[in-house]
Amino acid sequence: MNQSRYSLAGWVAITLAIIFPLAFFMAIVQGLIGAAVFGYHRPSFGPSDLLFMLFTVMWAYTLWMFRVYLNERYDYHDLDFLITVAICVTVLLQMVSFGLRGIAFGLAPIAGTVFIVLYLIFAAFAMITAGILDILIAVKLLQIRQGANDLLKAFAYITMAVGVLEVTVILSPLAFVLVPVYCVILGMIFLGKQEEVQLA
Image 1 (cartoon, rainbow, N blue to C red):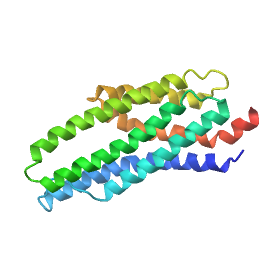
Image 2: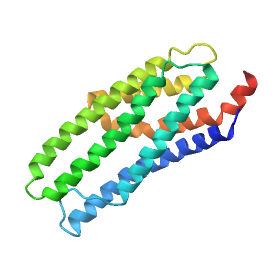
Image 3: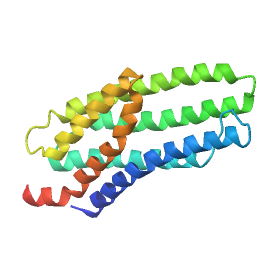
Image 4: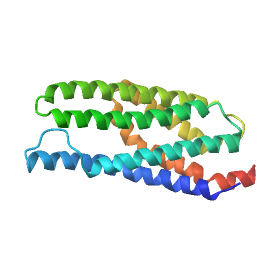
C-alpha cells in the first residue's frame, strides 16, 4: 500500500487550514482597498480569487483521498456517493459564484441591487446545500464502529457542527472559523494512516 499519497494528502489538508483564512483576509483587504483608494464598489476579481480557486482544487483532492482512505482502511463504501457529490457541488458552487460576480461586473452599475439580491439568495442556497451534505457525511462517519479511531470520530463531530452552522445560514460565519480545525484534523487522519495500517 502506497503510504506517500496519504502523507501528501495530509500535508495538503493542513495547508488548506492556512489558505482558507488567508483567502478571506485577502478578499476583505481587496474590497477595502478598492473602495478606499479607487472608489470601486462593484464586484471585482483579485488575488483572493486565485487562492479560493486553489483551495477548491486542493479540497477536491483531499475529499477524494478521504474516500480512498475509508475504502482501504475500513472497507467502508457508504460514503462514496456522498463524497463524490460533495466534490461536484463544491466545484459547481465556486463556478457559479465566479459567474455571478462576472455578470455583475459586466453589467455594473445597473446591476448593483439585483446582484446583491441574487448573490444573497445564492449564498444562502450554497450554505444550506453544503450544510446538508456535511451533516449526512458526519452521520455516515459515525456509523463506522469497528476500528474507528478518536481522530475519525472528532472529524465526524466537527463536520456535524460545521454542517449545522451552515444550514442555519445566519450562523454560517462560525462555520468558516471551524474550517481550519476541520482541515487540520483531516490532515492528522491522513498522516496517521501508516501507523494505523501497521496496527491493524
